[in-house]
Image 1 (tube, rainbow, N blue to C red):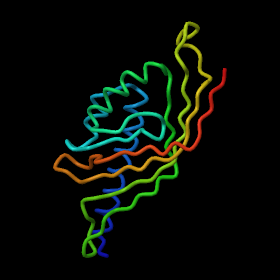
Image 2 (image 1 turned 90 degrees about the vertical axis):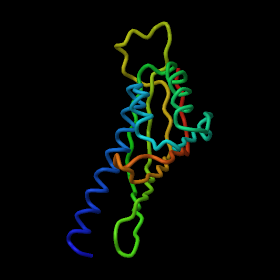
Image 3 (image 1 turned 90 degrees about the horizontal axis):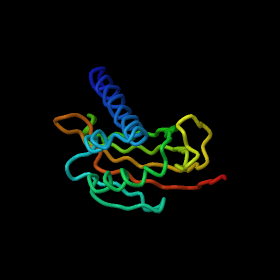
Amino acid sequence: MTQRVDLATVMDRLAIDEVVSGYAVAVDDGDWAAYRALFTSSGRADYSSAGGIEGPAGEVADWLAQTMKLFPVRQHLIVNRLTRLEVLDGSPGDRAEVRADFVNPMRLAGEEFDGTLTAPNFVAAGRYTFALARTYDGWRLTGVTVHEKWRHLSA
């Protein structure tokens, strides 16, 4: 590999990491416009393993906007990111996949919630699979799949 190809690969990895982090921030902040902007026009999301829906990113964003009202405080921790970049004839391609573990503590809404409580009473964890494509606007998600492995609900 040439030094130029190595630099392009590093830049792609940084850009892809920004998309994955942007995903977590958009969901945690309830910024559904930002969530939608992370996807290609044909992008899809699958939350079925966590009891959710699967479908076009825009429809899933609408579902998330309603569902996440149950959790006014939420924080995604996305770790152990394993990024695989497509390689074509020794050069970086236009597709990538990221597998990453997540832990997602959340506070359930209720009459006692006054915005000051910080201890979660619902935690979900598992692994995401992010599929990405290079577009004219940079790297975008073509698919997100949630593979929930466990959850814990405390009173």
